[in-house]
Length: 106
Image 1 (cartoon, rainbow, N blue to C red):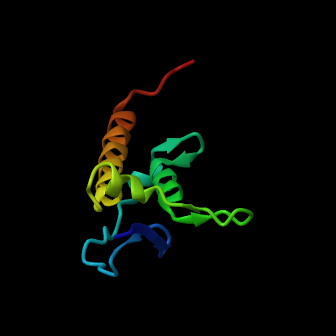
Image 2: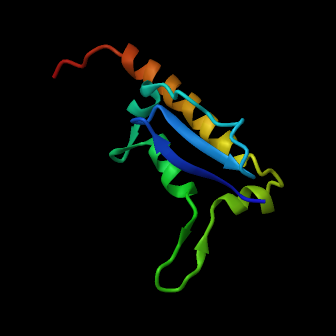
């Protein structure tokens, strides 16, 4: 059983989460504020999507599937979706804190 983030649609408003061709668990209409939480020049959500895409190395043909960890170690095929949801929460809460900070006068 494989689970993966499939694609970004409509300028980061929709992500498709595919689990056995079942899209009923798709997180939709992600708040744009979640993308404002930047880590090393990229949003935290972009990092997750980039890392959890299934990739095949062109030279060796080896499949790199970070989703397998959730299935093999956690025995939880929904792990990538749950991780994505947690990162959304952390991103939104961090943005609330940062936005509430006073302007630093230098």
